[in-house]
Length: 201
Ligand code: SF4
Image (cartoon, rainbow, N blue to C red; front, side):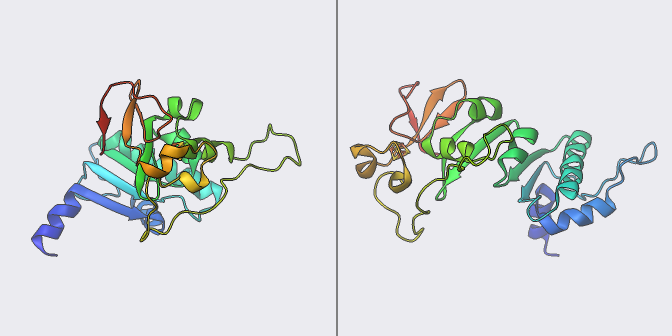
């Protein structure tokens, strides 16, 4: 293994769904006293878990998430979960960044964001989650339209063609991430800027 690659993988591991099964078999849930080995070599500071629960049944999914939490607790590393599953985020994460068409459109504390989403795309995602408390035969809301062609992005807001709250400025000016208070940021012209500053990262 070339030295530079070894160095990179020592810092960050990127693991896809299938590989979690390998961790499952290597990881020792109750290691003997003094044995702090676990399924991850090189003791990474950050683990990027890309869709770790995709295509898994709920039982395996729960085991994988338990494992991730246990690994995190034992090693103290930070974990970045990349997922489309809002339930996984709600149950396992502290901070969340919502992305649309390659850009972060909203970020902040998980509980605050789920309780009061600011960006219309986040709102659309949250209302489209099935709920046992909803009346039967109620049609689940969806976000109309589809993601723009990534090679031909529209001017202004990338979500404008699908946004139920779109106004004129949205198609002319790209909304930048702005501070929305209490550690929240959102990229939407309708979200008041609480800092007087705008951020682009
Ligand atoms: S900037 Fe305009 S189009 Fe974009 S999300 Fe906000 S309201 Fe909707």
